[in-house]
Length: 541
Image (cartoon, rainbow, N blue to C red; front, side, top):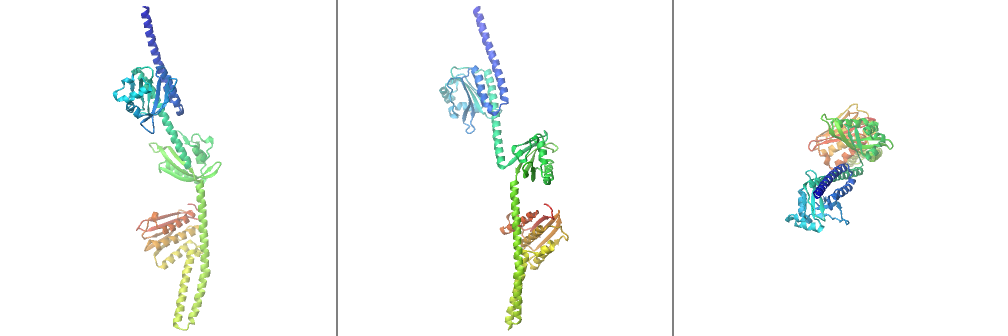
């Protein structure tokens, strides 16, 4: 009786120990799940190593290895986390498919392998069995680490080295939960690491390109901006919360550019345009005026089309603008130097060369009167007439170099005189339509339009093969619009001949220096129109 009682007590104690062990293991799984939820990427490896030790030791698992598939070679498993209860910890090398081909196929298929004895492996796993023996493995449970329907990220191998053991279904299911906790943690770690790498690359690329990034969430009333944005705009710390940063940006827009920028912003947010691209001046609180290039998009709208989220990038182009200003100033000075040189040459031709030719023609005329015979008189008359023709051509050349009429009588009369000269040459039928009272423009702008008209008419005569052409000058949009059209062969502006291209570039450069706009409308076989607009005196483009 006493013996039966002791046996019963022993059985009850073992049952109680198993129950307690079961509850303890369930508590461990619950604790693991909680601990792994909010881990930082740099904490995951340490926690997995600790978890392997905590659940392997009480379960009598003597060797546990968590393997992950190599990102470079899908046939290789790399050991990333291990537990071993032996004094000498084995050093594991990456595992190639050829060493465990049968296990490899099972893992790719997402199958669980539970082997109480290595001898129970199927015949096709002969290579796997031999390598298990070399490793000293007596029994094994291999669990694939998979997330949803995606391919496994790795495997968890649990082994005994001293004795064989069974792997009951209840225990396997519990260990599957542990494997799932590890899988989720590894997946989150990989995702976070990929995100950090992506952000680092984006940040490096943005920094390299000088780009500052921001994002506005109008539903939550928040603005995210990177450090470069804060530096570029000089955002004070007290303005970094909520929409304070957006309000600060608006306040620091240059007064002369503010309405233009905000109008473009309204067009973007009301859906008039899909993307905004604009350059403007910004008043940095400590560094002064900056030029900013700004690209913005709307990333989300509600059903009514109202903006919910927007984002954009800014780039400091102050240095580029400074260089553009310096180049523009250099071009202006070069053009002025060219015009001064032309004026000097025109005066020399008009006041010296033509006068000397006139004197020479008078002298020959006198010689003609006292000539001894008819042949000699005829020769003198021919020479005098040729000198007069040369004088006229030099006078015309001097006018083209520097039309004094432009300075003395103004742009309208200078254009009329130029068109009259072209008509007298008889090479083109030219109609003229000039506003009788055009807007007043500065001397530089007037010279600009005159030079554009000259070059455009030169192109008509020498390149267009046109029968008719027209010149129009109209008051428009607070300035003067000059249009020169022809019915010639036309051309592709993007592929114009080099000589013509230089002339067009010269016209465009002059108009831009006068703060105007320049356009070319031309199609092969359909003629050409040159349009040049300059603002009135004191105006802006």
